[in-house]
Length: 146
Ligand code: CMP
Image 1: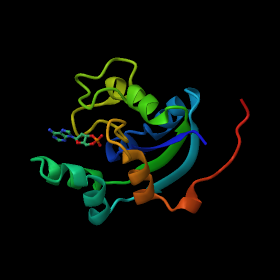
Image 2: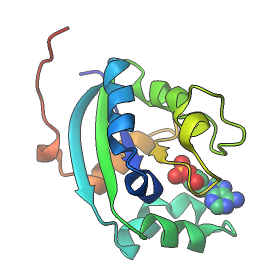
Image 3: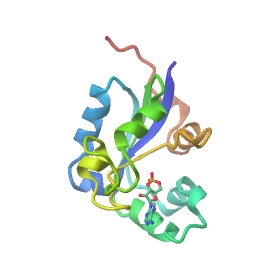
């Protein structure tokens, strides 16, 4: 199958009713949804998910924010999916994100930036994050009409 990538609508996106908008954008771009879980992240999962940022000064804020309310965790599939999603998300800081990108259109600040996607420059980040949030049998294998 094509490349799979992990995507999450963060608590701010859920609270602001942007879950559907994010899904619609990815669907309309031709990416295929293969797994989704509406869930509350606990502190342990948050620390594992953001483990690479452990030494950053904003790590505690990151964990507090991502556990502050429900998220929509998803796996999307497509050619070059990780990089495609990154391009659609826009820059991490909404103030720098181009109009037309998800963060450029809806992001409020560095933490309230609506969406997380696996880093395509971090080898294996997509597989690592998918495994952290989903069991293999939760990834749905199906064909989609073109
Ligand atoms: P995300 O793609 O979820 O991965 C790490 C997150 O850290 C990033 O999105 C930002 O939301 C967040 N982040 C980056 N820099 C800062 C910062 N200086 N203060 C707070 N959060 C930050």
